[in-house]
Image 1: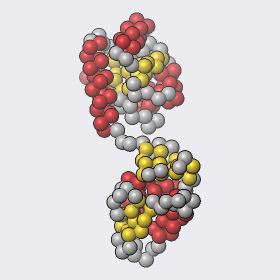
Image 2: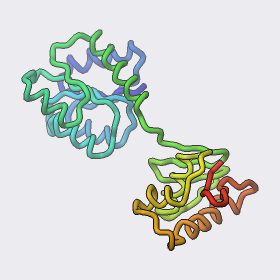
Image 3: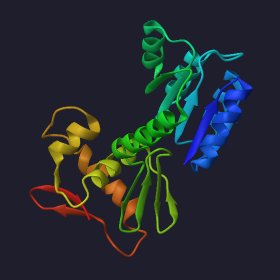
Image 4: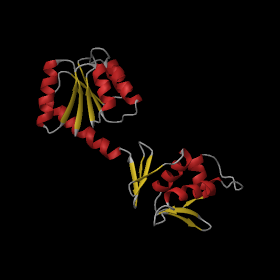
Amino acid sequence: MKILLIEDDRKTAEFLLKALQEAGYTTLYAADGQAGLEMAKTETFDLGIIDIMLPLIDGFTVIESIRNSGITAPLIILSALNSVEDKVHGLDAGGDLYLPKPFSVTELLANIQAQLRRFSMSAEPTRLTTADLTIDMLARKVTRQGQRIDLPPKEYDLLEYLMRNAGRVVTKTMIMENVWEYNFDPQTNIVETRMYKLREKVDKPFDRELIHTVRGVGYVLE
């Protein structure tokens, strides 16, 4: 597990870095808000520990920017600011837990474990796989047998919907409502047209069909 630590006080940082290392964590470290924010956006990490009174960019702004970047890793705030208003501000900005300084390292480590456990249980999957077909939902990248398949946005959305419901028959109405997000029009053939194009790219070049028509009902990917 990798921890991002953003703390400007050298003694506190050295103490935390040692404690985290002894607990088995790999640590990324930044001594100011600007460097910490850049690190958060360019490096992968499992949990952040962030001070509030940071040079260059304050911790509240760092946390808000991290969340606005789409990063969902748990963020623990460590700060000497201890008013109710500061705690509310920190949590509203996107922090998951606010621990005032001075703090107990035993309590901090216990909270790190709890936050990581909670996050791992609630995190959405970022990758879907059926047979030799894989979708990376973060990159919106589709591969089959290691070969990249380029899909326009709606065909990608259609495939993702099928893969989220792999093994389950989905009707034309369900597809219209969940992929196109409007009510079923019995006169339109948009689903059939897109499904044909999707099969041309996902199934036809390979030796096994994954997308099947269930006559009179709908479609199933399996």
